[in-house]
Image (tube, rainbow, N blue to C red; front, side, top):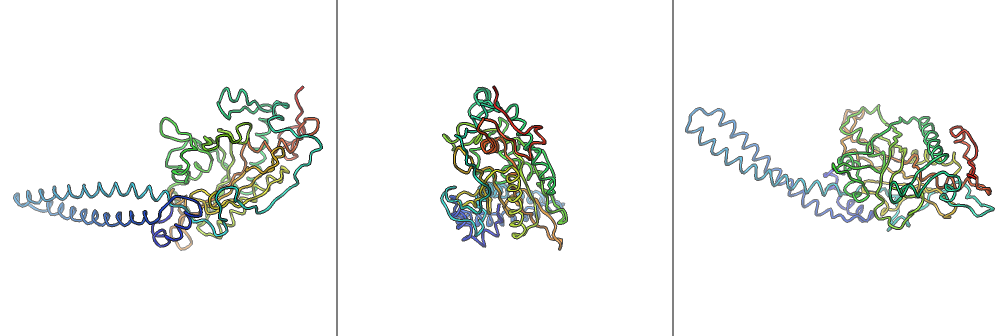
Amino acid sequence: MLDIKFIRENKELIALAAEKKRVNFNVDELLKLDDERRALLLIVEQKRSEHNLKSAQVAHTVIPERRQLLVEELRTQKAGLEEQEGKLKEIMQKWHGFMLQVPNIPDMSVPHGESDKDNVEVREWGTRPDFSFVPKTHMELSESCDLADFVRGGDVAGFRGYFLKNEGALLAFALYQCTIEHFIKKGFTLMMVPSLVRRQTLLGTGYLPQGEDDLYKTQDGDYLAGTAEVATMSYFAETIMKKEELPKKILAFSPCFRREAGSHGKDTKGLIRVHEFFKLEQVVLCEASHEVSVGFHEELTRNAEDLLQALNLPYHVVINCGADLGLGQVKKYDIETWVPTERAYRETHSSSYFHDFQTRRLNIRYKDAEGKMRFAHSLNNTALATPRILVPLLEHNQQADGSIVIPEVLRKYMGKETIKPVS
C-alpha cells in the first residue's frame, strides 16, 4: 500500500505504473473518493467536538429545566453525528478497497511488455547437456528408477497429485539440507512458518485482492498460502525495530498450496506445476533506502544462483516486464533453469523487492539514526522449491544406461553417488 499523500502528489506516476503493469486502476477515481473522505472526516470531527462540548455543558448544568433542554439538544446532535459516522464508515470501506488496488511504481529499469514472453534476459550460466542418447523426461526417469508415483498421487490427491518415494524423497531432503547449510553460512536465520494463514496476512503482503483465484480457502475463511513469505512477513507485523537490528535475513520453510487457476492445459503431468509443494524462501527486511533495497535484490538473486551453480544446473536470469510484475513489486528477476527434454528454460526462482509496499500494510517500522519512525523495506526470493527443481536435476544427470548421477554437493546427504533403475 502506498501513502495517500504520496499518491496525491504523484498521481501521474501512479497512472503510469498502472499502465506499465497492465493494471485496471483509475487514480482519479481514488482521489475523488479521497476528497469525499476528507470532507466528511472534517464534518464528523466537527460534530464530535460539538457533541463533546454539549456533553460537558450537560454535566455542569444544575438547573433541571436547562439541563433537560440540553439533553434534548444532545440527543438530536448524537443522531446527526451517528448519521455522518455511518456515511464515513461506508466511504472508508470503499476508500480502503481502492487503496488496496494502487500499484507500486516499477523501477525505471523494468521493461515494457504484455506478458512473460516480453521478459528480458540479463545473463546466462552453464553448459546445456549434449546427450549421445535420447534423454528421458523426468517422469520417465521417476518411473524407471521408482522415484515417484503419479498414478496413485492422482488417486489420492486428485489432479496434479504425486508421491515422492525412495531416492526421490531422499533427494528432496538432501536438497533441503544443502540449501539450509548454504544460507546459514550467509547469515540467514532459519524459520518453519505456517501455511494456514488469515486473510489479513495475505492483504498485508499484497497477495490479496489480486491473487484470490489462485488461493485455497478453508471453510472458516482462512487461506493456504502459496509461499512462506506470507507468514514470515506477518511475523513482524506491528513491530518497531531499532535500525541496528536491520537487516533481518530469514530463510523460511513451509508447505505451499496453489490452485494454479488460469493454467488449464499447462504442465498437466509431472512435477513442474503441482498444487502442493515445499519451499525455502529468502525474506529480508532492511532500512528504507532504494540503494540498500537494490543491493539486497542483487544479493538474494546471487544467493540462488550460487546454489544452482553448486548443483551444476544451467540457467539464465530474466528481468520481468511490467505486465509480469505483481501489484506490489518494484522489480523482479526470474531465474529459469534449463530442462533438456523440453529444450527450454523453466522458472525455478523469483526474486523481488517492494520498498515499503508490504511493510506499510503490515505496520513494520524502525527508528532511524535521528529517532524518526520509518517503514522498513522488504524483499524475497526463492531459495529452493521442490519438487520442481527435481525436473532439471534428474534430466541433467541421467546416463545412457538409465541411471542418474547424484550432484556432488548432495552425495554426503544421500550416502551414494548414483541412482540406478529398478530391475
